[in-house]
Length: 483
Image (cartoon, rainbow, N blue to C red; front, side, top):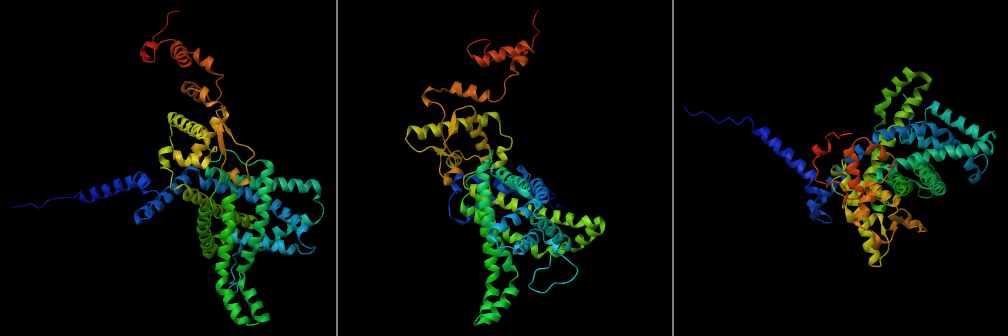
């Protein structure tokens, strides 16, 4: 009697094969040079996979959830100074008595960033946003009254400005971490960039958030303008698109100019558009938090609204930072390799990257070309920006590279570098010694005194022709030495 063939392991083998194929696809195939820059379907699919892979890897490497929590804390600490500073600054731009315009804009911004604080048990009119929680509104009014009371003074206004500047610097620091930028802006540059962004952001943000309340505007159009009904219907139809475009533009400006590096417009707009969609979905489904808001208020009492605000701001900053990471991934997807391979980068790999940077800069100098910029070096070496920036920082610190100063504003974010010493006088041995001794070496004599074998090895490093040869067995060095 013939027994049937038993293949119980075949489904498991298929699953294992699929997993191995998927691992090879994500770790090797999508990073092959032959697929970069092509327009066929496979190349586009690989591009999307590279973007998703870089985003997930960056989310883990940069600890975005932890950074979101930190920005939430800074936002809560600085919300008072930021509101008071906005009221003080508005006094120069608006007529006296129009401070309610700024207060309403601040309230709308908070309700958009943390929609949980606008939830109540009563249904609001269709097409109109729910009113802000009375406790949050009272908090805003208290800050506004303190700013308008005249008791702030010059010193108080200066302190408010410094606190607000520190909050914005923390935001810039988080985005610099996403882009691997080791050094932030100078103080004067921060003041100019932050002031420009706040001024432009206030206009675009107020306009876009005001259009959310489109029913009231549509009724005014219908009442006072000719062909009001047609214009009101057209306004209702186009308002969501206008709001989306304004918020996308505002967030693209944020992604473009907040990091202290060069960010291209296309990745900034794509990343901002995706984040705006997520923010609208976040606001659309905020009713899911209603029971959580009620439970939190019942548990914590009067301070419960701050817990709710903290939760809302945390999700808001999480989406913003994910958008920044997505922008980074889109910009670098065509010439970065798998970042998993760089997580445990060795000292030799860093040394070779430093040498590649130095040789690339020297080659451009010999050919009479302009100094090499960070973006060009990254594209030539195909290494992640945070590792390239660390190598550039090391080469500048030891004096082998020098950043080009007195550049235009457009080139500031993509800094150029030139050789810091005459190339013809440098040797590979000098390069090796400079890289190996980078940092503090004050403790080397103490370490050399710990064992004669260590002293012999140090002598060999200082002068390879002196002392014992490099192929000396460790067993021989570890033998006790007669006193």
